[in-house]
Image 1 (cartoon, helix red, strand yellow):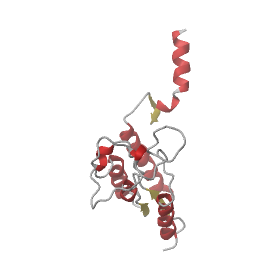
Image 2 (cartoon, rainbow, N blue to C red):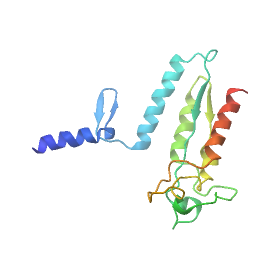
Image 3 (cartoon, rainbow, N blue to C red):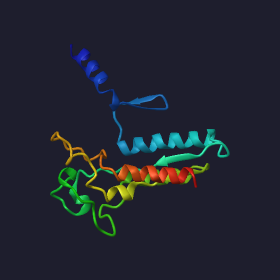
Image 4 (tube, rainbow, N blue to C red):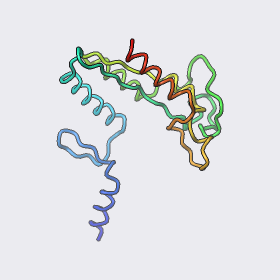
Length: 162
């Protein structure tokens, strides 16, 4: 019975598995997994993209705002935020995942246009659905307010037609 339960649980939580070069891992540091996945994509771009026919875009990292310490208000999260961060420099700095993106993109030989949404999105701690939704869930990773996702679209539009 124990083995069957383990198999069923493993099937239920299958997103915990990662595969690299035929080896299956039960779990892996998410930042390392992101680096490996992005590096695989970069290799594909280098081998398969013809820049005379294709323009490659990569949307940067969309930050979360679960911890108020990121904007110097440690007792808060996005759940009660109705104003963006006002300041010259975002206190938390760049997320590690954004550094991974920059590192991998710098090694790609083919042109890749980075739609760098990270910093402008960090300032919008107020644009998550947590405060505005009807349920009491804490959602500080998705975006809902008009403005921020629209700006991402404007960046893409400008890049496409410039």
